[in-house]
Length: 148
Image (cartoon, rainbow, N blue to C red; front, side, top):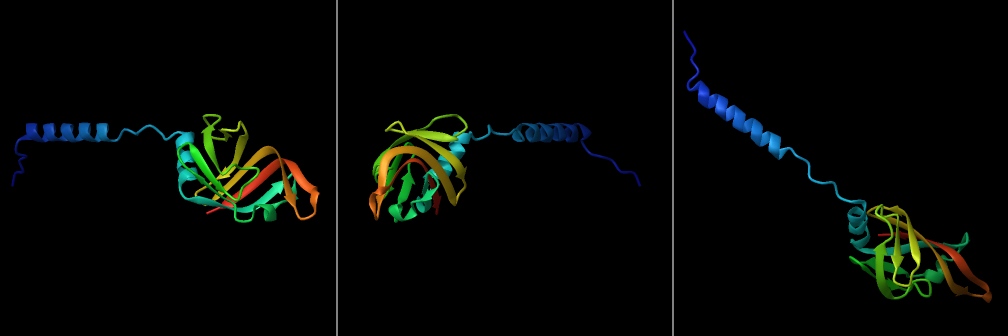
């Protein structure tokens, strides 16, 4: 019994066509930039404060109920005063998305950013008063930990 392959020229053409389709469909799309990745993580949902330190002193109770919501280039803060205005604009300060600048010219450093956790720090000259008055007010480096 003899096996014959019908239309060998058509099989060659089909094989070549499949090879070309695979070659052109396997190209990779441009990688998403660090800013695009960070913007997606920041703008998905509302961030709720879990801890606040000011110059290594716990100030979490002064920010009870503080939430932060980001949009493409704006933010809304609830109970973040006086360190965070109730709303404002922001823009990344570098292409690595390691920090952003608010519209009040405050540079905010992003230490950690995942889909559920955010750590930010900034230098603030606004005093935060707690029980006890001025003696316990703090200005300086604030570190904010947020969760979703």
